[in-house]
Length: 363
Length: 198
Ligand SMILES: Nc1ncnc2c1ncn2[C@@H]1O[C@H](COP(=O)(O)OP(=O)(O)OP(=O)(O)O)[C@@H](O)[C@H]1O
Ligand SMILES: [Mg+2]
Ligand SMILES: [Zn+2]
Image 1 (cartoon, helix red, strand yellow):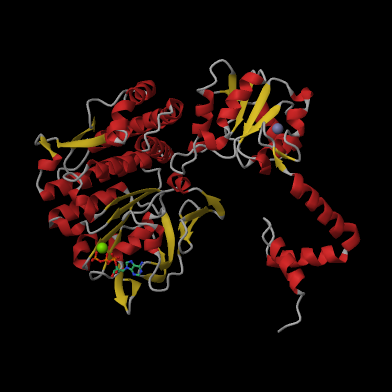
Image 2 (tube, each protein chain N blue to C red):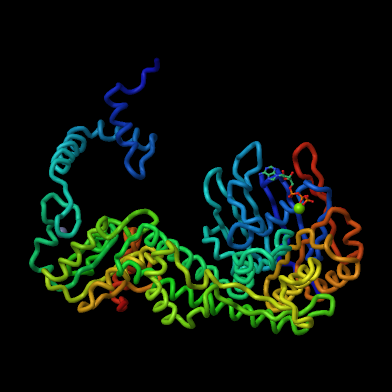
């Protein structure tokens, strides 16, 4: 059982790629080649078929191929029949067109559900809470595309409020107006995150032995996050004096954290070994794919995931991907990392030729 | 040296090309057209521009643009219906007037609140609006502001300061605020009819 979510992709002047056109048949994709060849750049392009800044969280200008600096463009055809174009002119923001019609970025979340793991996430459990919040919000967004709007609205209203706090503005009506919107979108964010946590937990119940189950919960920097929209609004209003002194907003969903505990060992994720932390992460991303269900247009990007796994775990991962029927794109330096895929995978070799990435089918 | 238009005509084309919707080529065509219709169009246009240029000003009461200190709408006792429609810019006001659906008065804010862009209540004629609600015995304030965070912040900000007055907002899903101008009359009428209290 395989799902062909993306059937074709084209890259123009995107990072190290000048002109690449590829067709996919829905089999798990193994992308191999030496360091610096352009493998991550290729799956980064795919990651831009979802709202936001892609798997490296880069700006539109970073994508522009040097030295030409002409702007960049990605086109894709989906199995569902939709056509996506996303591009940017030099110095301008990213634009999106779906089926020939200009659309806001958030519209992408409704036609493709994209998830990814990249090597920088290996430190997810031991670094700051913002990475874990982003991870959770991506899960929530994949389950409910509307989550993106709530996050954007909350963020904008909070930055406005923080500006007032920094400028020591004392106009209470202005704070009230912003806090109303923060409470409304903040409440939606928390609901979305809670729903994502329970969806991930129940989807892990059937996780394989190799990828362990974890217990997830949402915590807040200071005490409990006020429950519900009204409580959040009241708490924000009550907190103004303290926030004025701090120069920023001290409570709210932007101060929440995702806690994970390795169920079988009862061990906090941050205290697990490096390999165990990675296994936990893979386990959660697989749970997320499972939670989305077979009917949804799921794409999974795994950058250098094979390198950290022993042969047994690698084979288990490929089995799982095949069983889930998710369209996966994986990178690694050599084809041997994907031996266990065999004919059930599609192989791409990426090399650098005179400062330009070249991509070849290598079946 | 090529034999193009004279220096004066070139200067006129350059000025025309600065108008919204006109580029160098269309400005050239427009100037040529004007010159060919000198008596019927160009000179009357020049006179009208002269007249409006020396008299145009913002209405001291509502911010509408007219040729007197108080605009025709504010000056008309028949428009004292107890309703004020709050818009972001003059183009919105004119769009509402074109649709001919609203019989009250207007208040032009000139933008939306944005702390990050350093636009505060004083920059937006909000204090004047609060005054007018009292002096003109307003019973309903209709907010026709954009659905962006800044537009909605401005709406809540105004509503929060008018506890004794009915504050409504145009039907959601209708793009308003600097965009009313692009709506047809029927859509504006429907949005006004379906307004809801804030
Ligand atoms: N905007 C750009 N224009 C041109 N080249 C770029 C741009 N951004 C990055 N590159 C180059 O692209 C090359 C390939 O990067 P990429 O991260 O895709 O490599 P990779 O194949 O994933 O390698 P590794 O195995 O080391 O992860 C790098 O040499 C980098 O310098
Ligand atoms: Mg890489
Ligand atoms: Zn007036």
